[in-house]
Image (cartoon, rainbow, N blue to C red; front, side):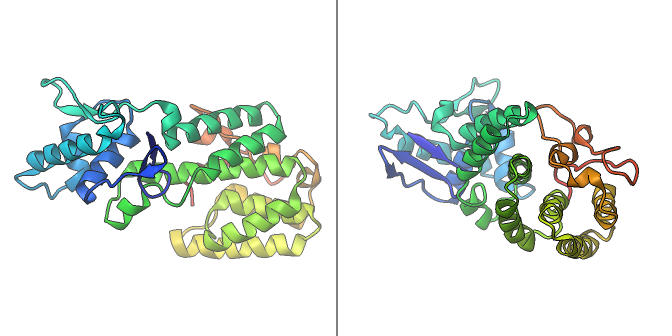
Length: 295
């Protein structure tokens, strides 16, 4: 049985998509998959399903949803091996055991871990390939059907932000491989839709500058500055402003082949947001670094 949550929720049995019932039942499954192989308490599930609007019958509705899921997921030979299991009474909750190779989120995490390790080691080609394989697992927003139904879990926001960071790491590897045309084409589309994502904007600016398109790089900065001011009511971060100044003076720092690796340090597991900063890497003084989730 295959479980897919990097897009609309899907469960496949022998290649056939299972009918997962109504929104409550699918939401229970989606939340358990986000925390696969980890105990989830009844309280966590109720909060995820209703937030501050918990009905008096919440626990009964949850029990019915779990029972429905058990029946649906018993398709694997009549044995509910992949169905939610109850925790001991003292813990009051459930756990969904899913082999990592059967869950797209787990496969994504493994590919990202391997890709970022290659990036840290300076192995640009395998890094770009592994990170692209990870991104290719996405079929839209994570649990897109539940989002449309009103779900707004912080876990989903975190996943989306990680997806953007993985894209940035892949772009770093491709810049180091000299794929300026490919990077420019991809990021031109992405930044048109997400104009306030500063790290991706900076990578596009660097690709344009290294392609001999200084004026276009500066125009990209102006667009991003306007978007950041409009969305956040603040100027872009110091790192982006420093990059603009480096382009204006045609600094050799950003014209060198290794500029992307110096400017856009890869994310590694356990690394804090500020640890990958670009302080001292541009001539205009210290910078804070590209903070994950920063728009």
